[in-house]
Amino acid sequence: MADASDNVNALAARTVSLIGAPTDIGAGSRGASMGPEAMRVAGIQQALEARGVSVVDTGNLSGPINPWQPPVEGYRHLPEVVAWNLAVHDAVHSQLQAGRLPLLLGGDHCLAIGSISAVARHCREVRKKLRVLWLDAHADFNTNLLTPSGNTHGMPVACLCGNGPQELVEIGGKVPAISAKWVRQIGIRSVDAGEKRLVHEAGLEVFDMRFIDEMGMRHAMELALATLDANTHLHVSFDVDFLDPDIAPGVGTTVKGGPTYREAQLCMEMIADTGRLASLDLMELNPAFDDHNRTADVAVDLIESLFGKSTLMRA
Image 1 (cartoon, rainbow, N blue to C red):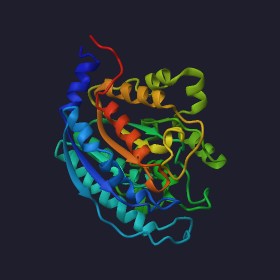
Image 2: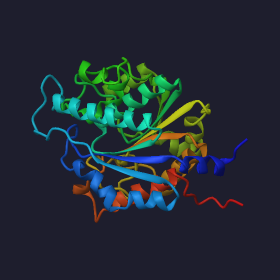
Image 3: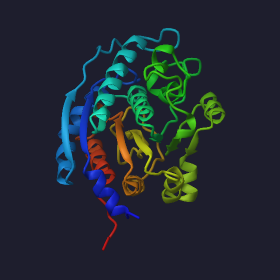
Image 4: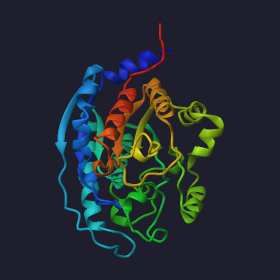
């Protein structure tokens, strides 16, 4: 049986495709549109290449500008959100078809609708199982009937599970795009009351901060990664607000009490040890709220851990 170092080496052999999605179309604050460039400035490509990973930067996708309008029937900017997610879907699916590992640089988290819809479509085509790790302070299972803001960055998991506007839930060609049973949410600590009811009804497996405080990140990740096998495509959707704002202030939706730097690094290292990572979102980085690009630097450091950088003393 291959050990963790063999798995990490196999992961490093994959070509990573950087896909910039510079929009804050689904967010409640402006600025996430600058996220892709902040990650490039922080050296995401150079950091991965230093680990022996082949990296292709495909540039930025294009889409409609943010009109910054109030919600219509419970959704803000729905036509524009659909357009951006269609672009993301097509770009991610194309890279998966080419045998590459897509790394989506957001951009706000509504774009995970297009990204994960593409991953689910790819898994159907190649007959693989899908596991989604959702690293976030929020469950993102809101609907237009629950949230007065109408911001779709709070709705992607609900949409992916079939609970959302037709234009979004159908993007991947199958409704629902995924089953809630395929999702493991980690680091959750801010969920609206109505949203909490929907999460329980859907059967989402959630390792919230109370669980992590009591049981530890190691146990949470062991459970979240349980039953992965060679026929499982592992997708990580990493919202930077997953992290405690003391180490990652550069997001528009900070929530106190998140994972520490070391807890987050262990999370990433354990994912890397599986050797199953096959696609990745880096979402909600907002340089307008950051301090000298500090959050982007932390994000790059943690993504390095996803690709094999470890504090473990191996023989």
